[in-house]
Image (cartoon, rainbow, N blue to C red; front, top):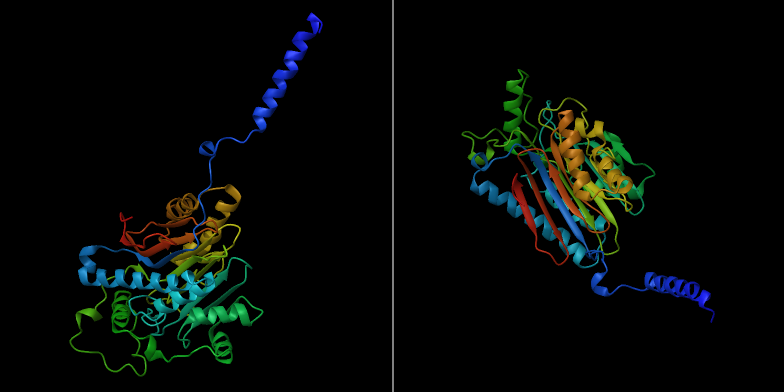
Length: 364
């Protein structure tokens, strides 16, 4: 080899070595591995609002915590056995609709004219199919009717008498006004109407006369609570779904519809981003498109689920003067909740993890 060729050959060998080094697989200990997706995940809410332990009392607090644990158990039973996220949503919400502690189905609040008018929605993140109903008065479980709209009709939303007729034809279980009635909600209506100087309507047929004296359980203790119920779920196949159900707000005006059945406002699910169920003053959630906004931040801005939830609830909703909260889950297993009120009934669990239940702000 000529002396003058040595620098060139050394340079070639050096470059070759760098190339091999760049292509080599780093040791396993130095590789950053993404956490494994949990087999399933479940996040539930039972309403947000002004809540404090002193007003609620220990027995009532324990009762609500037990109800949220039971809701988790219903969803877990579906997901643990390979059921779909949609089936888990139905199992959880139907149980909450049947629990008079919550403002959905039995135990729903009353409108100004003394009726229970119910709204519900469900959405499948895998297909973007959705079903919603509003102004329902005779369907025992509105979430079941919402699913029937999604699966058995070409529509997304049906309202009022038309939705009821469709439900009857689809075989959805019906109920009369007495099923939904609770004395506590009726007393809350009377109190609200008197404060507003509005007349109190006659008691619904079939519920009997007003008890005298009223039992402690019949007295409203949370006038400023939005008892919407909802759940988001992730199943073994990696699909998310969301479902929400509500009786609206006490003494609401004729025909008022909130955010729950508005897809993208109170309910939304998309396997490309997340699933969200909301609770709060619906008019604000509609204006902001809260549920869709959170999912867009996850999909389009690359935010974590918790960051996206806090951006919309703690910043945007609060700035607009709205109040309430959300629960959410992503297809990769992130779970989150966020609320700007003093409390929100909430529970969550992922496969292999312990259940977590909270009510007041400051809890985990």
